[in-house]
Image 1 (tube, rainbow, N blue to C red):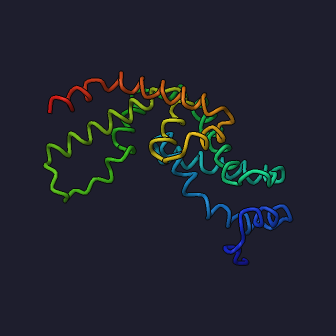
Image 2: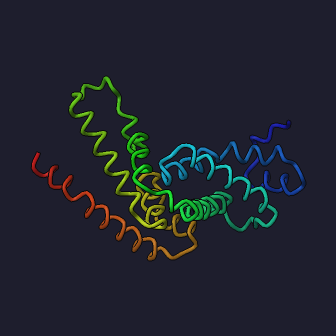
Length: 200
């Protein structure tokens, strides 16, 4: 296998179009962490995130012949990722029950797993932080598929609004509206936590 690490994305794509699969593997290695991050934030479940990840790169490989170099490869790839996430949500919607919420609580994928157990936080506070993280995860899961994507890509992955608009093929104004609705819903679901924070 040749070392393609010095090639640009577009140079790699040209290699792939010429039948060089190892060039596609280099593209995967270059961008897979970001794709998995988006998927993991969206589904809060490692196995489901892996399924989305695999589907994204299957679709990318099948469709790369139609990729036009006028746009960034990452924009095209993340657009596929958002489409797969929404499709996955719709196909699995009937399984989004209390058992799923329990799994979310166990996984605590909104960040509580990164708390250092030896950082001086009391056991009571650690337990409370875990409970809050689970509450936030469950509240995020109540958002519509597009609202959830917009919220997680903006606040967890740090994408700019115009980038998200490009991924979702919509206007920046539409992204702002979805983000506003998502935040309003989350504030409603987590109102007691806001009040608790004021009283402490």
